[in-house]
Image (tube, rainbow, N blue to C red; front, side):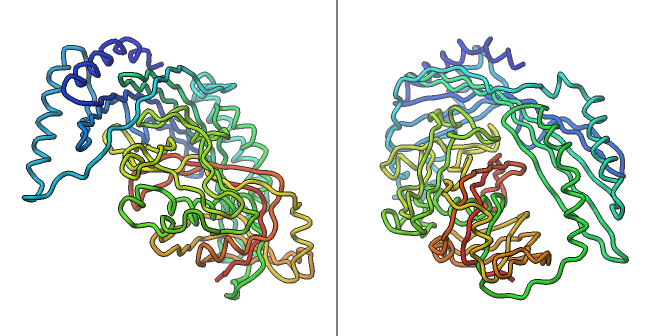
Length: 470
């Protein structure tokens, strides 16, 4: 798929050369994607194409030593090069005229353009399109039917979707080409006891293809079991407790507590407290935090939407905040190197600093040792949502399950739902144990504020900390 991008590649290079006649730097990003989803529930089955990531499109970016300008479009041929150059210049002129008298554009250094050339595809075992609609729906329905065999289960809704995309980035010294395939799946089971109804949601994700169905199929018994447990849950008594976070909950804390707060476009706008804490202890010495493509998950890529090669960024090193993550434009304005986190929702949107695969490193303590160390507290599982305040480092997250621990043993009592709150440095400095095994998941999307959605994953090991619950 996407072979048409090979046909227009020579013309894209000519477009960059034409723009370089007027600008000190020029680049073009070409992207195309294919997305499809399948779902089945009591309401029936459905197949849909397309998604939130956009279709075929192009973005040109130029720097002139004073500012940066962009122009996006969804059709391209060599004959259109003069028109694109003209429209870009007209837009930049019009934008400059809107500035108040005496106000100059924010000075923006020209980004580095070190030579780089690559072409690579992500690996997979089974492409969903090769498996076919009929077989996928058949296997999803088998998962649903297996779940309905459990007494007390009202319905099981099952879904799978994939995204395949190709992106080409060309500047004067860079020629980058990547093809990525990721797949996600989910199921939600509904259970009833008397008049009470509970539900339990679980997601699965992989940098790969329809082989993910095997994990979905193996997870149905656990999902139906937990939803029946939730029917016996109790309300939480608010307080501060010793808590053990499962890898999903650890991932939510990573993402919400220190993810958005170290996105460095917020540093440029002076909207993140983390900017004043670089080089300081912000967490326990057990905490080391990474972001990037050193692991394979749904947010893994070879280069970002600004042509910066991906890698591994250490945000926190044994408790000390080392740096944030940043896009190329923010990096230029802050005088630092970009980290490969410049991402667009689609070719129609600007690039922001965005997380990719974000996680805590593992330690040496087993989950069993953590549980045994707790006099009274909870094992937290199945987070559902969260938000943070980067300006003041507050955090509020929803968790579906808190399993009671008393005298070093699980009692079998379950509390739900749970609100996790606190001041980020207090929470992270309270971390006292870390498990050895890291798990990441990327079943959902992350928004910048209330919009600008991109695919991310997060995770880590089992983690013990002191946390306020309500």
